Amino acid sequence: MRTWGCQETGAEQGSVSDLDNLFFSKEFRPFVDLDLVKPRDLYCRDDRCPIDGVKLTWDTFMNDRLMFRFVIVGAVFTVGFAVSVLSEATQAQEQHMYVSVQDENDHPVVDLTVSDFVVREDGVLREVLRVQRATEPMQVALLVDNSSAAAPYLRDLRDGLGEFVKQISGDHQVAVITFGDRPTIVKDYTRDATELQQAVGRIFPRPSSGSLLLDAIYSAAQGLERREATRPVIVAVTAAGTEYSNRPYQAVLRLIESAGATFHTVVMTTDGASFDTGSRYRDMVLDRGTERTGGRRIDLLRGQFFREALNEIAEELLSQYLLVYARPDTLVPPEEIALSTTLPSLTVRGRSVGPLQ
Image 1 (tube, rainbow, N blue to C red):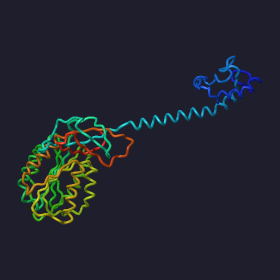
Image 2 (image 1 turned 45 degrees about the vertical axis):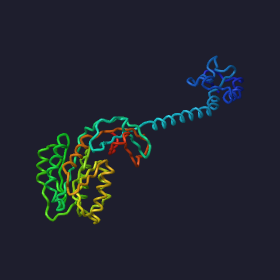
Image 3 (image 1 turned 180 degrees about the vertical axis):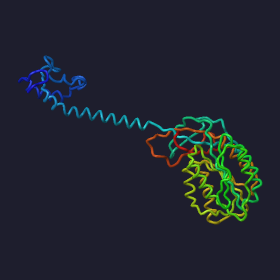
């Protein structure tokens, strides 16, 4: 048999046992005794062999090094896989939240830093990367009750709503929608404060009409989702009366969250309470919807301080933070995100809206 670089001899044939001893001896050091970068040095090449007295044929070399090759390949694969898993585990994806912070008097707090916030996902502490003023434009769906139940409050409503749209518009878009008898777009999304104030001035009660608040919320959330709004907000102003919508409250809540909207509401209450099924569903949406999305519910007895309540919501929206924190991207989405501050006197609410685009 022809060797690579020399002729096979009897001495070469007797060298196989020596090779076995070499490969499986405790003293064998593969990266020192053998040059793995130049495997041809393992067998005879002209007058030189890597080990004195051992001359290998090509076939012998290939057969006897097979196990060693498997060991090396397996080790390389194992190390590479471990490094890959470790690398993925240490990578993180940025998540962002729109956050509102108020003091004990419900005034916005606007000078907080990274060290003032604490974010936990399913109880696990996450690193807050940065905090800054939220400057992204909002798309605000302003829902106004003009049913018979709201008739006693509509004059005050128009005054307060006029101030609200004046505060919010400019950099942000606002739409005005009524929901007495049926959801109706009075003014589609615009930044023009004058047009919005004129639209508010055209809101009058519908005689003998009922409230369809859940239908209005559903339609507004659907529209915001269809528009792919970057910072959607729903503000609902309603009287506490009978709710005539048959919309399942679970579907309304799901769509609010699916649209990524922050939900605020102002409810004008009376001494009496409504116990019909529609009203219970409405209250479930108002309570759970605001709690889950970082919004707030404000109840006003007989519509008192309506202007002040809307002003609080406007100031809160205009003073929000954009908080960015790190989430390991190998994890499934958390079931619960808890946001707090290191300052116990402050109230903090937030809405997680996923990774930065």
